[in-house]
Image 1: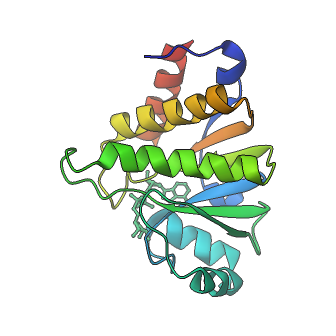
Image 2 (image 1 turned 180 degrees about the vertical axis):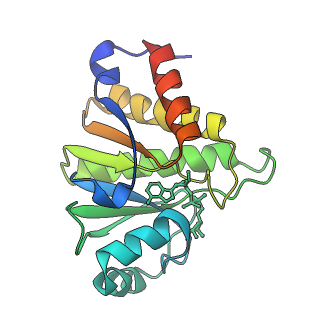
Length: 178
Ligand code: AR6
C-alpha cells in the first residue's frame, strides 16, 4: 500500500454535517444513473439547489456508475455540482470497489479540468446503495490521495459525513495514514 506525503494528507478535511451547506468550488452528489434526483444526499442537493438543476440534469441524459458529470449549483453556496452514481453493493465481488474508485477518480478529474481549488464529497454508496462504510472510506481516501500523487494536482478535499459512525471512521482512517 502506498504511503502518502504529509503535504497531501494535510489537504484532506473531515467534517460532520449537511453537504448542501458547504461553500466550496464543487460538492459531489451520490447520484443514480438517471441523474434525475432521488433520496438521501441526492434528494437534499436537488431540494436545496432548486428546479434549474433538474432541468440541466435532464439535458445531460444520464450517467453510468463510476462516471461523473458537472453542472451548475443554482441556489447552493458551492459553484458547481459533480454528479456521480456509485455502485450498488451486491456482496463485493461484482466490481463494486472498482466502480467506487472510478466515482472518486472521475470526480477528481473534473476538479482538475475545471481548475477547482476545493471539493466536498459525501460517503458515496454508503446509504441506500449499501456499501460497507469502513471499506468505502478506504477507497474514497486512497483514491483521492492517489489522484493527487499521480497528477500533482492538489485541492482541498472535504469529506462531509452525515452520521457519527462515518465521521469516526474517516477521522480514524486518515489519522492512521499519518
Ligand atoms: N449531506 C451529506 N451526506 C448525506 C446527506 C447530506 N445532506 N444526506 C445523506 N447523506 P445515499 P448512496 C449521507 O443514500 O448510498 C439516492 O436515492 C448518508 O448518510 O444518499 O450512494 C440516489 O438517487 C450516506 O452516508 O447515497 C441513488 O438512487 C451517504 O450520504 C441512491 O440514493 C450516501 O447515502 C444512491 O445511494
